Image 1 (cartoon, one colour):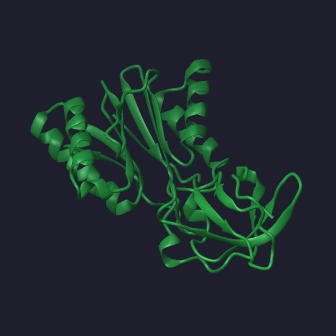
Image 2 (cartoon, rainbow, N blue to C red; image 1 turned 180 degrees about the horizontal axis):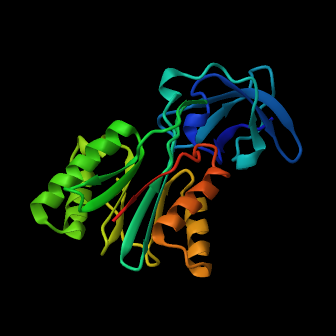
Length: 254
């Protein structure tokens, strides 16, 4: 029987926090015990407690894939959350297209197919999209719009918002990623204070972001499609791969 910290290769929220039965398998031994999350441990780390009747042996680390959860208890209320989406932005020939899918997934259920996650702000001068909690995303969009109206410059507004997001105690609790852009600039904002302008004019966030970005890059390099055509097609491809992304695509252009 093994005992020790188990580093899991998937998000903590996918695993119930208390009383999950776990099967631990090693090179020479295996057994059944209880895996409990601890607020004192690092994220995605769980402590394995063997039954008292078993000889636990020396404690040592367990490889991530050696822990397989079986017979999980009911998911706690705070583990149920609205999951990610996909937002893709493409700049080409001085034009910007931002596309977002419409799926809203709550825990294991699709609750909405046609949500709008991309919108024009600042009097139509900027297009923005968010991935994460709807309330948090809209709050951050409003904060960015106020910064843009104050500074009249998208880059300065993004930097000032990122500073507030990082330093303000209330904003720090908002969990969302933002893409903002106009015909001259395309920026990604994160809650860690990052403001990133991609090299190739493609930016993607959300659970299907890597798939959409890869598809958009391939289309830009090998076709003559316009920015909005690339954004729409790439997001449709991402929707075929990511289970949290559908084909109800909304595209805003500038």
